[in-house]
Length: 320
Image (tube, rainbow, N blue to C red; front, side, top):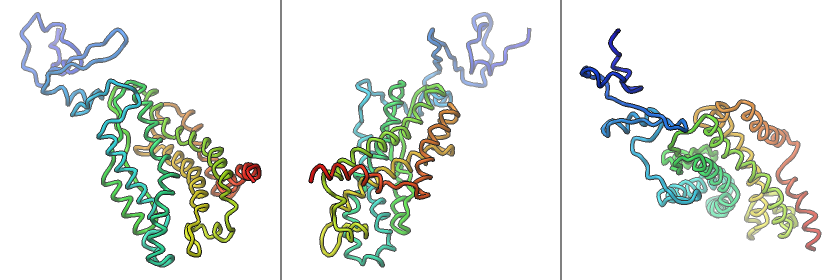
C-alpha cells in the first residue's frame, strides 16, 4: 500500500497516525470535524488557526468580539462609523444640490452658502434614511442568520465622494458597508444581500402615503407658484420652507428607487451579484421591480412630484 500524502492532513485526520511514526510534515496539521447537524469545524494549532480559519471562511484574521445580546445592537465603534458616514454623505449631497463649485456662478457666494446650509438638512432627512436603513437591513438579516455584522465606513470612499461633489456637483460615493463574519450558505448570503434593496423598496412604498400626508396637512403645494417653480429655498429674501418639504418627499421616493436599482446591478461588491449567485429568478424579479419605475420616471411617464401632489391634494382639501 502506498504512503499517505501528507497534504491530506490539511483536510482530515490520518487514521494510521497511531500505528506508525509520523513523517516530517511539510504543511501545518489542520483537522476538521463535523457536528451531527452538519456544521463543519476547523481545528488548528493556535499559531495557524486564524489564517486557516479565514481561508475556510470561518473568521477574520482578528476575530471580532461577538455580541450576545439582542439582534438590534450597535457597538460604540459601529455608531461612530455610522455618524461619520452619514455626516460625510450629507455634506456631499449638499454640495451636489448646489451644483458644486460651479454653482457659485449661478447663486453668488452668499446665496450659495445659504443654499448649501439649507440643502444639507433636506438631504439628511430625504436621502439619509435610504442609505442608513439599507445597511441596517443587511445587518439585521446577517445577525438573524447567526453572523457578526457591523457597519464600517470607508474613509477614502467618503473623501472621494466629497471632493467629487464639491468640484463637479456630481455624487458618486462608497460610504462603507456592513462587514459580516460567519459561515452562511449561498441561500443565506443571498437573503443578506437582498435585504438592503428590499428595505429601499419598503421605504419607497411607505414614503408615498407618509409624505403625501405630510405635504397635504402642511399645504406645501399651496405655496406661491413662482417660488415652487424656481425650486429654490430662498426667494425674494424669504425662506421657502414649502419647497424644502416638497423636496424631502421627492428625494425620498427617487433616492430609494435609484439606490435599490444601483445595488441590484450584478457587478463587483454590489448586492445584485450575491443575489444572482443565490437565485437568478429572485435576482431578475427584484431588479425589474426597481428598473421598471425608474425607467418610467426617466422617460416621463410619472414623477415623484405629481404622485405626491395627487396624494396630498384631497388631504389638503379636507384641512381647509
